[in-house]
Image (cartoon, rainbow, N blue to C red; front, side):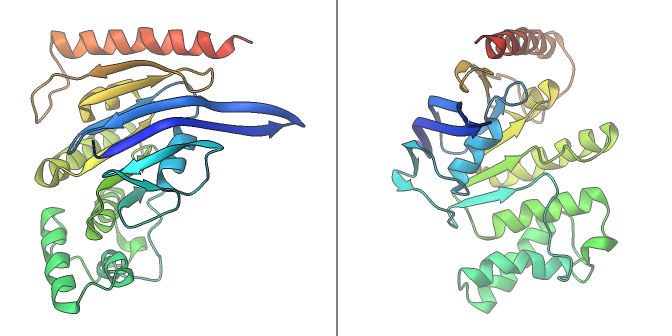
Length: 254
């Protein structure tokens, strides 16, 4: 397995009383899989993603990437935030170069990799532009290839399409699928959107609102590139909506 999450427990203080966000959560993501965490608000999806990234520490449990235990941020995990988090003082090209410079990639290799990534993201000739000059779709593609520039073993995404309107969201999902099909990096993504989970994922993991309990691990057996129609697609949609309703009820229990 490329990513292993074992027995993760995380508790916060809430008005002086302990509040368990994640209780003994375990999951795995295979090489080249696109896996989505889906669940009601407050179920611990983003907390778990941040623990995998090394941004926050678990109270107990282990995270392994390619069989190596990790506990802090590292180049083996790329992260894409909902806001894209591009450096506004850097050009598009310099944003993509940044992780490669941090890793000490030689200049010639860095420039070749930059050219390849911009071509893959259909950003040829745009490297001189700054974030304020980019459309939402271009910012999202830049964030993706910047995360891929360091050649991470796992790409982590926290609702990367959540800050845009519905039509742009659909377009960005299609762009992300196209980029992913070329690269096949292992992905763990957080979303609250059922249709997005079906469209993007090889597997959808549904988390309960009660301690982040994993209620279902649903394989999505649809050909790629994906279509947003058909009987099987809508069967998955109905199944996930039912699971989310159960997850919400579970989270309301004391």
